[in-house]
Amino acid sequence: MKQVFTYGERVALVTGATSGIGASVAETLAKCGCKVAIIGRNKERANKVCEKIRNEGGTAEIFLGDISSADVCNSIAKEVADKFTGIDILVNCAGILAASKLWETTEEEWNNVLSSNLSGTFFMIQKCLPWLRKADNGRIINVSSNAGRMGGYENSQSYTASKGGIIAITMGIARQLAPEGITVNVVCPGTTKTDMSKEYGEEKLMRLISRIPVGRLGKPEDTATAVSFFASKETGFITGAILDINGGMYMG
Picture 1 (cartoon, rainbow, N blue to C red):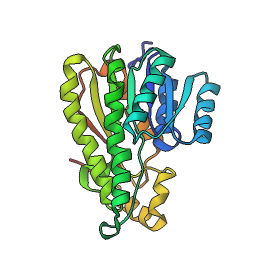
Picture 2 (picture 1 turned 30 degrees about the vertical axis):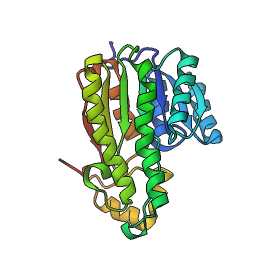
Picture 3 (picture 1 turned 90 degrees about the horizontal axis):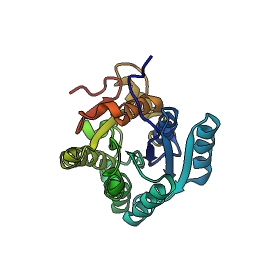
Picture 4 (picture 1 turned 45 degrees about the horizontal axis):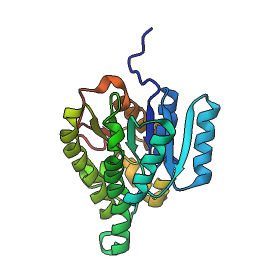
């Protein structure tokens, strides 16, 4: 039986791939047949993800760096392209979460969150673009958040602003790159059970669950499945799309 979605042996660069949603995305794309570049800052966690992919018969390599720096984004893009002779799929999943109140947010926190979440996404796209332009069925998938859609409940405004910005640049870049055959889409997970979500604390998490119609937190693979859909060769007529993955918390 012919597969509905196909990938070929394309190269997928996944930022934030050492844990949580990013790790699940890397593992899922590897299962789809992609060669995966694991981008992150923690070598130990990167090794675990890489080893799991290889043990399951997939192909993966590790590239360490902090993507909040445009120079680092540039270096990583070149290293990945040199190693795999190109980049076909870019998944921007790296990010940090802050849960401080409006009146508690410091300038340092604001700058750190915006640099990691929004600037990192933009500059990874910019620096990978030369190879995406050469790719067959180039794909960019950005990971935003339910907070970027509706403001969130328990997260900080620095996080909300960064994730809303990701949605905005997704649509703008999608328009610019559509004539070149590169699609740009964004997924917006609701609160997902990862190490990052522990930042909220048990009480806040219970409040969030009470607002989710399906009655549970998201799982990393919920988002990974959606990312793999956008990464497939068959989704070339979908660009600038926003896909909500939040158990019904936001419908609009």
